[in-house]
Length: 241
Image (cartoon, rainbow, N blue to C red; front, side, top):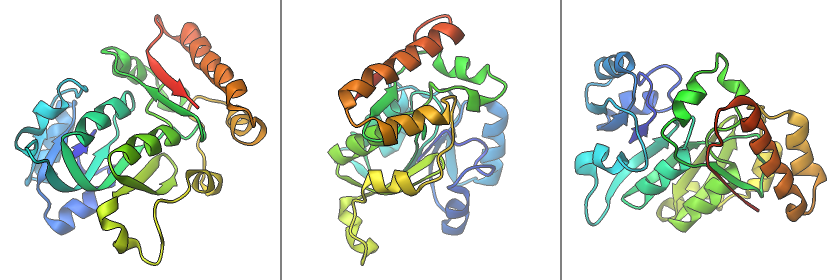
């Protein structure tokens, strides 16, 4: 399952796996030209060519939504907007051995932050010439760790913009490592890209502020102030420590 599949080749971490394994499945992409290139590159994968939301994602999965839940090898979500609400809907309906999800690296643990669904959020994000300027995208690593833990997944790796989780049923495959990994250690060792948030603020929230109750209002104020300055509305988001 590939949510935010682009053309199935460029900048997609599942392309090598899909070609070598001859994988079948479902890809979701909203851009018609990319959809057509995806069909040509990976003809075994069914492409749902429309915008995904938490409300329609299960319908787009079609035959993969079953009772009991279908097992798939890989689930990827990368839509640069309300990623975690879409992911949560999928986790309740399918089981994946590996989950790959884009994380907003600018919000460090332990802060659980996520953009929620709004029908205009993706278009707003896409209106910027440089998406790296936009902080209101995706969800934080800590939010993802908490969400996936509730569905039986172990956190195993983080780097750049991506976090990887595996289902607890495949822990033996990691021997001698013992998942889940510590998100604080992984974040501290990772390369952190700035997504519209000054790196100084990310460092302050991670290294300098020891009281989450002091940091939470500062993080909340940053996002509200940014949206008031750059958007015509306040898009919904979740934040907890």
